[in-house]
Length: 90
Image (tube, rainbow, N blue to C red; front, side, top):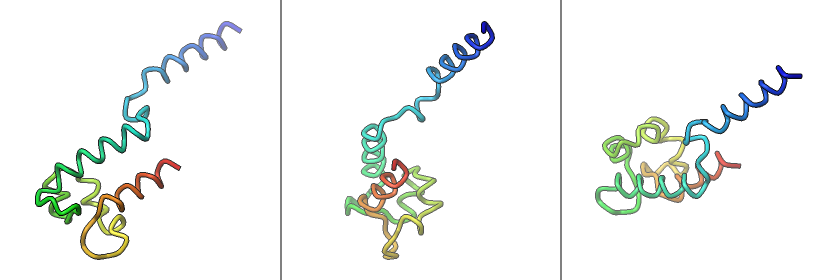
């Protein structure tokens, strides 16, 4: 019984100290994504090229650019990026 309680207490403590990235709410993720997108969009046209994504430090987006560019126009709009976030948070 004591071992079970100790294990439960350690499990709760581990979850409580989990990295903040796992604990981010959807709203926090969306706010961070919005900020990073705007910073990477150097010409302010509301869409990113793969080079803008790379230069803006959005390395995961640059790596998976063709998957997010769902219409194949060579750009990723914020709506396309948000759709990806929405799909991950289902």
